[in-house]
Image (cartoon, rainbow, N blue to C red; front, side, top):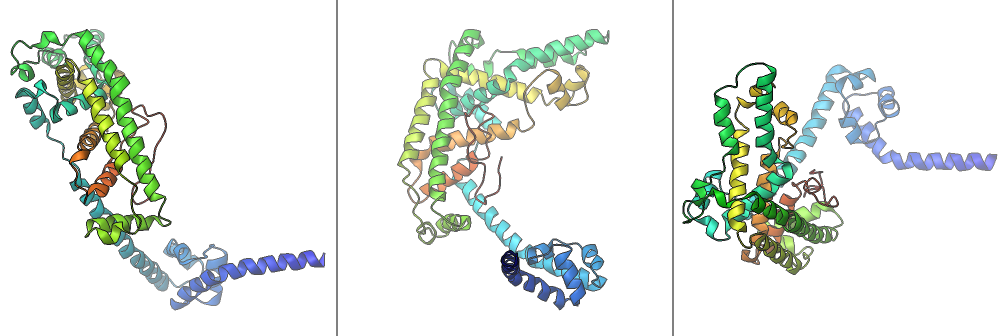
Length: 396
């Protein structure tokens, strides 16, 4: 029994010795602000404060409840918060600065007006940036069920009019036309002999089949390759902050930062970029460019029409979200952001071979960071990929 008690005593003393430095630090800090031994003991034992971080998490009432004077307690809490704030602000500022520099490396997305003008001036005759955007918009619209919205919304309007025994509002016909018209005169005007009748239901289905079987897998595979490259490099750093320092060094003159740990060879990423471009071109074979332009034009029209504030009341609901829910549309509130990120990601990866060697690594890191903002599982990815950004915080 005596031996057991000795072992227990030694273990307890060892544990206390381990806590001693932190506890002494806490005791010293409390003593600085006038706390007596009894108060210090209560803060440590009853409130469970073992480190200064624990002390900083307490409120003034916690300290006064343990016996500390109100004025001293307020000053201690204020001082501890002021110590932590500059450090957090500096770290946040550095992260924002790096993020802004990343953003500048990637290509910008043209506005809807610029994109439509590119289609109208004959952009549909060849595969170019406007065609890539069209394919992504058509693909996402298909994934979200956007093409089913016009029929569902029109039926809901008529049904609500019947239920209320009232005639439909005159605006019903204008809205219905904007949702269902498929003339494409604006975008096909530059091509002699091409009109809306060419975009048949069979051609639509064939194009969507290519998107589902070729385009989505190719985009997702490109991110898997990109994520694998980044994670390999990240694993070389024992401290995540070193990775940020390395990347930051790459922006601020290059050599000092990036030489800390050399990034993996980017040859695999260029291969992934080539594979992505080849897959997109396969989607555009035959009349794919024209069908993509028409379907993206449809998606843009439907999306913009859904913003009309008159629509919800015409099917008997209060707002846009309730309207989408009633007609069974899977168009979430972050649809626009998802579309923009996806378009930017594909355009950036497709331009991989135009990036110079001095910024190549940072360009791919910026592309990876953009990729972490896309919910790949929602878009049909078979498994979840990295969910943390450069700071180690959860992104998705």
